[in-house]
Length: 357
Ligand code: NAD
Image 1: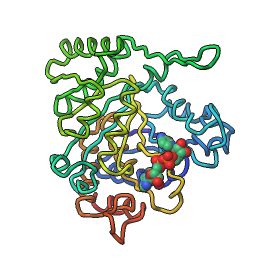
Image 2 (image 1 turned 30 degrees about the vertical axis):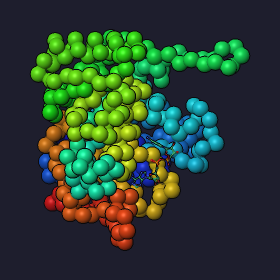
Image 3 (image 1 turned 60 degrees about the horizontal axis):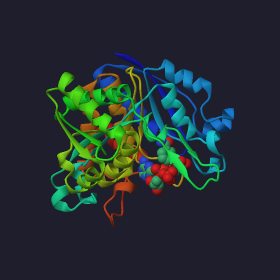
């Protein structure tokens, strides 16, 4: 099969990790007989330097014309003095909006080989975990009406959700659960918030009518924050609102170990998605060949699975990464405390490529 992929490497380590990922994608393409065509676009700080704005129209148009988008990371100290809409990070929101991406997927799995670097108690880490957080991305309190009173000594933010907004993200979560262990946990604060009560009603109605084969349960967000640390193996797929998902997905990512391993996907109604590592542009290590490319490589695996429906190819990438870690190979960010040698970013890429042969 043939796919057009828009590459948006961005700033800092972005070009290094996207470059590594393209090599891995090409190895997958030749093994499974696919063709990936890449076009590179600027966004973030590099676009400010070149075009005077973080998200030029040519980038938006190119991403809209592609089958999917692979993004590195944007931002860095060079552009920190800029404010509001001129900042590099504005490109991310702009791309999500332009591509109509209202669902964010963040897997958090404990790689068996890295159990010793997990911050959880060994008896909990030993059970392992593999969960997926499905977060609503374009509604809720982050997009609600907000303001201050005339004297400026009081402020408000409002949370609003419609049935349609809840249904579309919940449907996506049920579909993902169906392809995994068929267990969906909907997280809310229905004992306090009216939006959460609507959330709960809507998710249950959808479950009964369209997904009776998926086990659905609910959990209050405060309890979920505890259970992610006490018993992460309970979870398969989690679906939740924008703000709760923002907080819980960062919590879940921290319990796995390294930021350099964690992928994400943003999806909308079409098969086109935007795939990116959860970390930033890491200006402190940019250009030193220290960046771990694995989070971006695993993001590409998500692209193959969720946008191109190439599950076998996605499994192949994930299994290869897991094998390389199992063999003990580490980049600096995931090395054992006290270890004196580690791989550079390009050496890790080569290890992954050689494991694919
Ligand atoms: P960061 O994620 O870039 O870095 C945090 C720490 O993790 C740093 O020590 C960094 O060296 C390390 N790290 C990150 N990715 C790594 C990798 N792949 N391999 C090895 N180590 C890695 O977060 P930050 O320092 O808070 O932000 C730096 C810049 O990135 C800022 O301008 C910020 O706005 C931007 N940012 C962008 C995104 C994005 O594009 N999605 C997300 C977060 C931050």
